[in-house]
Length: 122
Image (tube, rainbow, N blue to C red; front, side, top):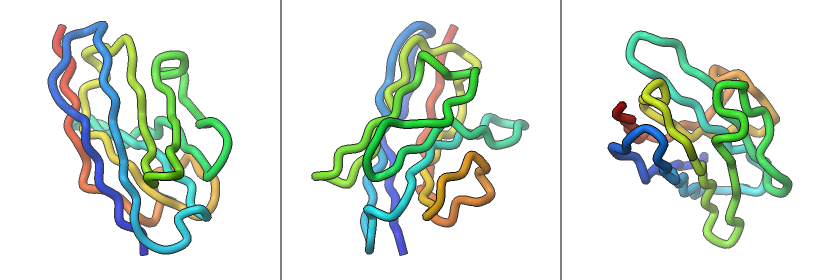
């Protein structure tokens, strides 16, 4: 079992930045990939990237490439999603999720956090 808790969401103006955090707890955390997924009202879930125990974040879609960056702090079991140059279309609930294997498919992630709301005003 893995427990995930997100934080850092809020209201920001277009062009601004936010850093989301996902604190993981449980067993064998070093075996899990931690991904970020978002869901806007009326839209399907969108995969944003994932990161293993070591190495950089990977799998960024074109919609966030160059603006969003994943990082992992092994000492605190925290994965950060740095979001720069935010746009109104980034408004969504952002979730972190854990999976044993690399995946870009949200449905394949086994454990999920409760989500944090990000709202970008124009």
